[in-house]
Length: 100
Length: 284
Image (cartoon, rainbow over all chains, first blue to last red; front, side, top):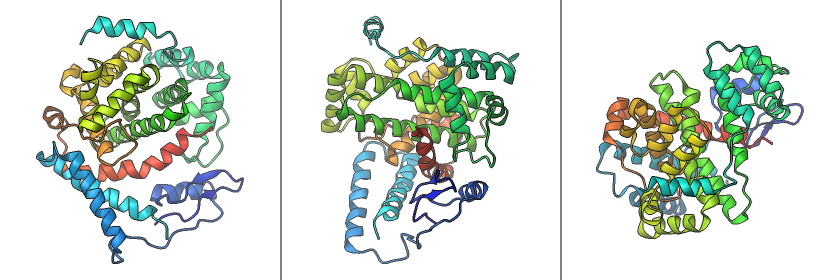
């Protein structure tokens, strides 16, 4: 679950920025500071909606970038695992931050 | 590398930043097992800027304490000696390098972001390995590329040549530094850390984060920062000055005895905490 708007306490102090993922630690913190309201985004899970063409282009671009970056080291199985996780992370980050 | 030549260059830089004396006194005090919270509170309280900063940070949402902490002693009791030392060291180091040149502002911010990510990563790896002193790992990660900041501010033309060459030739920044300067940011960082009288462990990690096997008794800590550096580069957390990934040092990986399945949760943790910590670091 992601924040749709920044969260402030009753005195207007910023507690969390918009687009922050709500972890259990964050929720505890918000309760502790008495956040009066929290706006969350509707789910934007990467696998739920069919990706439009633009998203596929972005995905390809991210993959190409990672290929280039890891070209000298991806033979190492640990580095291959890091590359796999990084690819997943970068795509999720893009989908999380894209407008709409 | 010609060490004497490098030392002469560093010595010549009159305005090379020095750590505030209070932070050095705090470092000494924390290292003394006979020190009490009251001793530490007295030193911090004598410095109005540090007192204000400490109270602001301890009351920030980053820590999430449900009640207001209004005394330095209260902050020390809640956070502990090491955390206070590292908190003040970290924020003081940020202050030492104000960005004067607008053109370099973005580059410097990206480099700090990379360092922050690496600090979080070192802490996350240490946490996974049940390492005792996570705050120490955090500071090691934060300062591992301090030599690059020195290059950027004191050798701006060389820094531009290095980053341009790294980009055009598709090589690591450390390789471009060897070509252009004949020495690397790790060596510059080591000299600066020594000048600041930082603990030897921290000096060793800064000097050996690309070759943890050379860090002697601290090869484990250097290996943690080495891996964290790789993870942050992979995730594009900030920018380290090049667009390549350094090879994983096999001896470092073996030292850590980390299972590959741990990589994903560690990377998730870095990502999750990055927004929170950068918010706290930017607190004015």
